[in-house]
Length: 308
Ligand SMILES: Nc1ncnc2c1ncn2[C@@H]1O[C@H](COP(=O)(O)OP(=O)(O)O)[C@@H](O)[C@H]1O
Ligand SMILES: [Mg+2]
Image (cartoon, rainbow, N blue to C red; front, top):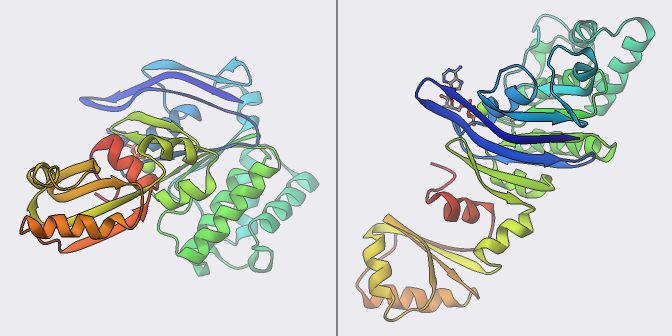
């Protein structure tokens, strides 16, 4: 459906996107995961034709992206990070307005507006003003607007950012439904649990680059299937790692100021780890053990925590 090669974009001295390459098939949910400022929005805007790349190619259904082509515009749906809705108009009125911009009219427009309102489960609130909606509901109308013209390739830029857990759950199900109907979805998020649960494949992004790409299982196996112990406290991580090496065998995932993370095969290793720390006279203020997840993968690839 879409194939991107060597996509790059600079803003002055900032290399916002560097040599990004990937492809996405019909029915697939492809996620860009990374914290704020790593280039997710810039990437998406180039793929939608809203921003001109400095270099790289974007092929959609085997043809180079031409933002001026109506055929291409019809294929692409874009759900922007910021909602673009008129607060004094109802959901139906907002969607009719957007549909008009896509060239939909008459019965075709009305029936599509009904379809997308059903998809986002807002039929019963359709005639209320947007101003009376919760943030999550507004995000759902925004999403509805992006798929009104029934595109086969949908870009969604942080459609759940700032939405409460219940609202996020609803949005993830809508995204799954869209993919199940055969659309290719490109989805950005800074929530790692979401990328893990929702996306068929994930690109982990940092400082404009894709550092790792694959299914959650493939990415996880780069760290190992086991567990990681995270110790935080008032200590020098690298020094502690060195001290523990004599008494404790475990691969160091990351060590920094006040942080040491090690990979272990089994959760029962925690006891041995704590004993080894105690023997060095070091205390942890915060100690946890968890199974490998995307956050661990992110830490391994970037050397920093996703929550930074
Ligand atoms: N129009 C712009 N002018 C200058 N710098 C920009 C512009 N848009 C984005 N940037 C910078 O490019 C980088 C990537 O931004 P963005 O793509 O918005 O990241 P994300 O969506 O992952 O938060 C950031 O450093 C941001 O400040
Ligand atoms: Mg963004």
